[in-house]
Image 1 (cartoon, rainbow, N blue to C red):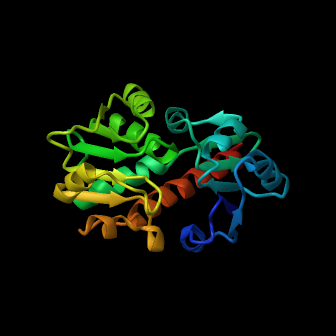
Image 2: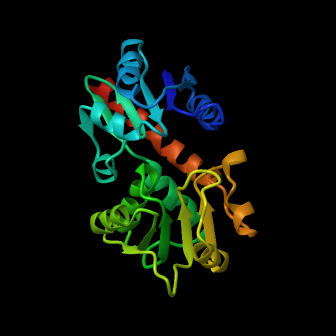
Amino acid sequence: MKLALIGDPVEHSASPALHREYLEEAGIEGSYVAIRVRSGEGAAAIRRLRAEGYAGCNVTYPLKEEALAACEGRSDEARRAEAVNTIFFGRRIVGTNTDGIGARTAIEALLDEPVALKRIGVLGYGAAARAILAELQENDAYTFVWGRDPERVRDACRRYEATPWPAANPPEIAVSTLPPDAALPPELIAALQRADLVMDANYGPRATLARHLNREVVPGDAMLEAQARASFDFWLAHLDRVAGT
């Protein structure tokens, strides 16, 4: 089974190692490669992978919206996030989004309880943030959104029944989907320093939030592993479906 990751950058990604491990665990002969694809080239890359016999691919920044448009079938998760991070190449190009379940699974593992009724703030409103907000809404968390563009914050709040980041009584849990070294205003830094749990969607050298906050921040490794496992299960389910037809 040939699998790939497309996006820019991809050289830092831990996805190839994870999925090669999953292939070995499942006893499936296959490969997983990371391919740098620039913004605007996502649809062409997806068509090329399909023509070259790939079974599926993961999609990372900045191609998740392009991938959504390139898919012929979309899961509820993809439609709600308006972004795709996982594609299966069958009779149709089918896309889903596992970023939300990755974040929720990682948070619940740390809390050792469900996210229902928890107050969780999401920093950002891009593809990953939307997937996380959709998943948290589906699981009855109270969500808050922070971002520099007030209109985009309001739009995210409307879509996912969230609330703009409050000046008083900020959420006890925060998940940052911001790029590494993003500048944060002093009042947000102060709120994050008081939070019970802060998670950075970045991992490895790109996980810089802890340094800026001068506190413990959970890096995105657990989020990545959970969403990667969900992606792999998505591919296996579709392969089983094809084999059964």
